[in-house]
Each structure stands twice: as structure tokens, then as C-alpha cells.
Amino acid sequence: MDKRDILMEQINKLISGPLTFNDFTKNFWSYFVTEVRSKDLTENDYDFFAEIQETFDWTVENPSDEERGYGYLDWQQFIEFVKQVTEFYRKNSKLDNKDASKIKSAILKES
Amino acid sequence: MRKALISIILLLFAFLPPAGVLAQTTNYRYTGQELDPEADLYCYGQRYYDADVGKFIQPDPVLKNLNDSRTLKQQTGQDLEQLLANPQALNEYSYVQNNPVKYIDEEGEWFKEFMTGKQSWSDFQMEVGEAAMHVNPVMEKVIDHPYISGAVIGVGVPLAATGIGALVERGLIGLGLASRALPPTLISQSQRIFQGSQNFKNKEVATGALTKLQDVSKVIGKSVDSILQQASKSKSVFTDLRSENYGNVNVFFQNPVNNEKLIRITLDPTLNKIISAGFDRINQVQKWINEGDLAGFSK
Image (cartoon, rainbow over all chains, first blue to last red; front, side):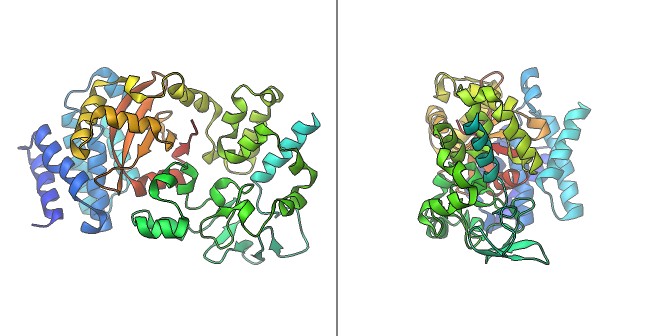
């Protein structure tokens, strides 16, 4: 199983439901920031997974009002974010920071 | 008054295209590059420079090697940490880190110390005339940090009273460089973080940020205190100009386990509080700088 498959498996598990916040931290976030280098993936794949990791840096399970004010997502919003960016990526084969920011902003506005 | 006027002229010169408006009889300007009259661009060997906007039209090829520490060191003489200490060094399109008073770039690749390159101080004096003789300590500081000159002038020096800070700001806007200058209100706001104790260990940390700091700590194998101490020492400080993060201050430093991802600590300067921590791709940080989303701040 290559690194892309390992990461994609975690994304699919997250979208379909069985993955907890702590599992995602351990199995996707920690793995991506320590084990994955840009040379391990195509540029577009690397950017796609990086946008998810960097958005998870601004996600907590139950943010306080103050944290929401700083732009933190809660766990359900993050799952929605991952669903939408994954769909975007599958359609466009590319996801840059501006696309991901737009999706995140729209989710934050909805709540 | 005369000195103040000279200072203004000198400052504005710092942001002008290489003598593009000072000499009209030759196609060779300033550091000897040839003007292509049809394209209205200067050829710097590796890339072209657009004097109208004060930027190269292609990125600096040297900065493509940010992930290759050996090549980077060979080509720039600096390692990544040194480069990160100077936010403007990561701007792929700027001419000599927006500091033509101090540096020259003869080949379009990296910069050389003005005083050790082909140009001498006297060549520079010939361009700006007598004004160069009147560089005072305040102006020396401005020359070192032109992109935050509003802040430098604003810190309790006599010239602030003459309104030069505001003039510089207007001058930069006039030259189309406003996106790289930090608005004065954000400069004073960002400065709050570095007033009093410089050690981030003594700052309040939002609950979510503490959780994230603990995650970063596990991943890199260093204590939260040690991470905050390292962040305090970092010179890679950027104020965020993106609308959703406007005014936040981001401190970046090297990640010991993955050099493609910088460790980021984000502070809210209005509350003087750490609000987030995590990792950002070095290439993405560079993009934000190039696109004017992050503005360098010198503490």
C-alpha cells in the first residue's frame, strides 16, 4: 500500500463515518506531517492532503465561542469540509489553498 | 527640514526602478543590465525585470531549491533558517528583497551585498547625488528595513513628527507596492506581542491552541515549553492580511522532522494570546508572501 492509498483510506473512513477525532489525528494528521514528503505524491495529491492537514490544525472537537471567533471548525464541520474538498478534487484534479479557503469560509458562514 | 526632504528623496529612491527615471540617454542602467525597449523590460540574464512595477516577471530560480538544503546553501550562502529570518528573502519576484539601496542582483539570481558587488557606494552617490551623504541613524534603519519603514520611523524618533511615515506609505501606494507594506495600524498592533516578556512561554494560550501545541510536541518530540521558546526566538514573523485571518501574527520556524513543513504559531495581537499552532507547507507560505497575503514584520 503506497502513501497515497494510506491517506486516501483515512479520508474515505472519515467521510463514511467510523473514524473518530483522535483516530484521525493519529492515522492521518501525524502520519502526513511526519512520514509524507512531496516526492512521495504527485504535486496535486500532495496539495490536496496538505489542505486537509492544514485545516485540521484549525479544528477542535468542540470549540468555544472564542475559538469559533478565531476561525476554528468543529469536528462535524471538518468532516463536511473534507467531503466537499474531496468532491472538488475529484472533479477538478487540483485543489489550491484559495479553493479550500472558500469551501471552509462557506461552511463557517452556514453555521 | 532640508535633511528631512533629502531623507524622503532617498527613501523614494529605494523603491524606484533602477535609475529608470534618472538617466535617459542609454539602455544600460544602474547595475549594467540592458533595457529591451520593445518589451520595456530589463534583461537580468536568468529573468526579466519590469521597472514599472518594481518586480521580476519570473520567479527567482534559486528559490525553487527550498527543499534542497545543500543546493540552497551553495547558491545563496545561507541555510533555510537564515532565509526564514528575513521574510522578504522568500519573495520570488521582488528585486533584491525590495531593498535596492543595500543589495544588487546582477544576474536575476539572488542578491549580493551592495558594498561587495560591482557597484560601490560612490556609484550609488552619483545616482542620488548629495542625498546619500545625509544618511542618519534613522535612515540607516529604514534602509535595512524599507518594507516596514513606517514602523521604524514610528517608534519614537524625531522624524515621526514630520509625518514621513505617512508620506512613505503614500509613496509606496503610488508605486504599486502597497500590497507588500504593512498598514501602520497593523504594525502597532503587531508590536504588542513583542512588548514586555519576549518569551511566548509567558503568554496566554487558548484551549484549542494548547491541544494543537501538544499534538505538535508529540510529533516533533519536543516539549511545549521548548516549542514556545523556539517560536519566541524566530525572526520569521508575518502579519496575516487575508480577510479571514486579518491582523493575526504568524511565527514560523523549522520543523526538525520534516523540513518541507514549517511549524507555525499564530497569535492574536489584540489579546496578546496564542490562538493556534500547526504545520504549513513552506511552498504555501512562500506563495502567501508572493501574493501579499502575509507581510513581514520585524520585531
